[in-house]
Image (cartoon, rainbow, N blue to C red):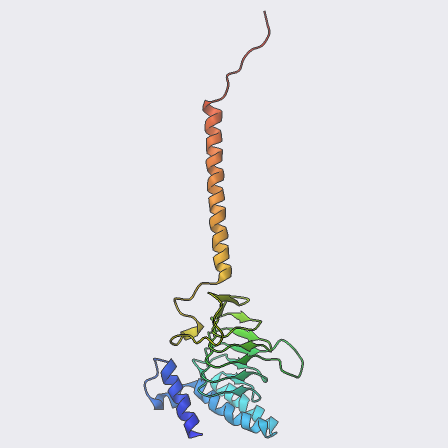
Length: 237
């Protein structure tokens, strides 16, 4: 238990430059508090003490602003930064070294009693306000940008952004691992939303067509004013 606690504290130091001491992390990080209470609630859940587990998870939600269902499975060195508004559903499975930011939802879109929440593999980073909805897999090392809405499987090492989320950049090699720690799921070097890029190209094309149309109308006006044929009278004596 103490080994796992040391790992969790070290994970905060590795991913949050604002952390200055271990006592500060232990006392002031609600993500760590929510994780510790979830582990106890999950142990109760697995032993059949379902009501006690739910009561403890509700107490954790009241104290930290983070809602983790006691049935969710969470790996080692899990880190929730800031934390307020995070929701993790019952059948969610989270691997090792995963990072979530505030406002993240790992939810389901089905009322079935079976698997209905996502599986998050190792080293995934999910940015603030993102929603991952459904019983699919987010591959190892994937990055989900802030406010993205993910509705289908994400390949290992991919970066997805937008609503609905779309992959940016080239398709990654399987089991790709991102270099460095990508805060909030994306870095300044990542590509922009492909939909935004397509809209920008359309805007540029429309502007070019409008310019060409204006040039054509200007040339037509010049021709009518200067190069028109004179009126000739026909007939008469």
